[in-house]
Structures are given as C-alpha cells and as structure tokens.
Image (cartoon, rainbow, N blue to C red):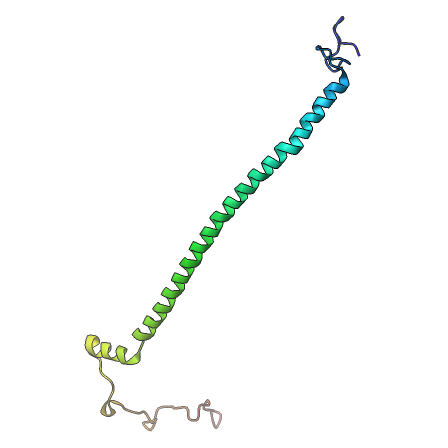
Length: 137
C-alpha cells in the first residue's frame, strides 16, 4: 500500500523486517513472551494483592460486627433494667403513697361513698338495655 505522499511507505504497513533487521517471527515471539509474562507473573500478583485486601476488609468488618453485638447486648440489658424499674415505679402502693403525700389525696372510705339507685325520678336504664317507649309516646 502506498502512502499519499510519494516516496514514503504507508504508516499502517509493517515491513517484514524491523529497522534493526529482526524478522517478523522474532517480533511475534517477543509479543508472546510479554503475554506469557503477564499471564504467569502479573495476574497472580494482582490476585494475591486483591486477596490480601479482601481479607483486611473482612477482618475490619469482623471487628465491627463484634463491637455492634456488644453494643446490642448492652442496649438489651439496659432495656430489661428499665422494664424492671418501670414495674417498680408503677406499683399501686407506691402511687397511692405519692398521691397522699404530694397531692393530698386520700383513699375513699365507706362514709365518702354514695350510691345512686335511680329512685329520685331520673330516667335510668335497667338491665343494660334501652328503654322502649310505651303507648306511642
């Protein structure tokens, strides 16, 4: 193939012999040696470095998992402690004592209680049902 400029070879055509006089098969042999080097040396080294990196990251995640599990256990223990404290503070005897002391409240006695029997003429539902109108009223 000719170059568009007269007297020059096309840059796309590789001559049979390199400027140093090496034949084409020797150049191919050098390319194969380079590829073989990449396959046998560079790729395994990269795989080993990747493996070291992955193990380092996994170890860091393992430490983080252990720390989070300890934190979870502490939070669960704190929750149980707070539930016990809530039960203690919600005890009816304690609440009554605080109501008497702080709010001046007192337990109702027999003389304080009055019952409503509905005998003073108010409309009272007896037996839990609704009162029906009689005589069309």
